[in-house]
Length: 278
Length: 159
Image (cartoon, rainbow over all chains, first blue to last red; front, top):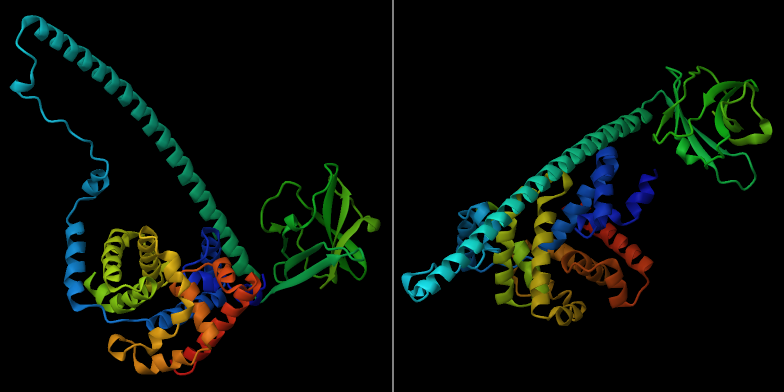
């Protein structure tokens, strides 16, 4: 990632001004943790803008202070439950009094009691149904919540792995070898991170175009013009960095070719996709 | 909350006043905004940005909502460019900012100040700024970047 280009894109200023979209906010929050340079630039932009906002300062009327703080105090005394329910408080009909009851004729009284019983039974049935539905909904929500928690843990693990990858790539014994397209005008490009101390080779296979189901990419290392197999590139890998199963301590160049599924003992040079000198 | 009010009150009130251009409305907005700040205080995450940026976002949205309610937003925003420097040259008794910073900020390129004001203070998006000033979106982004560089130069030299 080109940090200079990113800093110049204006996204940090938007973030500092509180105008970035949700997606941009997530992106900046992630990148500021990975790149100290971005964190510094962002802190600087925020501080500058805060100072700029200071030029608009106007003495707040003294009597407003007590009014505002009293209002805040008033709200702080209200329980969260009350705050949450007060906007949906149902209208409660006045409780019936003796005078509201129907005339005391026996027939009317029977009809009234019958109607009240029907309403009572209907309410009971409704309550039972509602209760059952609520229980089902709570169970569904618990399940959904548990799924979300699992996904969050998976994402956090993925994020930690990515951060570890990024930190690894800055170690002094890591050499970055850029593999360019072997075809004239080709745009394929891939970077290989080679740990010259441990011999581990990592790269991001998703940077390469998709292949037919019977083909597979294969990585090679060239030493004095002789290619050595570094293993095939897994077809279904979504990982940001794939570690080659073969370690190598010396090499002049890395290359990737297209081979039949499972790989070849020697490279098909006419199928060379990308190559880069160490 | 008292500390928050005492520390940021003047800055936030000045910005709300700049947006609403109405003292009474600005005072209502500040009151509602501080209640909202209190209610949402658990949502503030210092790892995501400065406290002032968070406060400003709440206060600015509250001011813009208030304007929308009284259907005066377009009228107020329409005159924003005309008075962009008025705050700097306004009566000193109202300004709690120290004179050095005020002078230094006053030396900002007027176009830069105007863009920063629309973007940061008045909450215009880049496309809205492009439409208002009738300039391409790319130019808006470039000029805001230059404005930020100038701001950095201003505060990088002694502030």
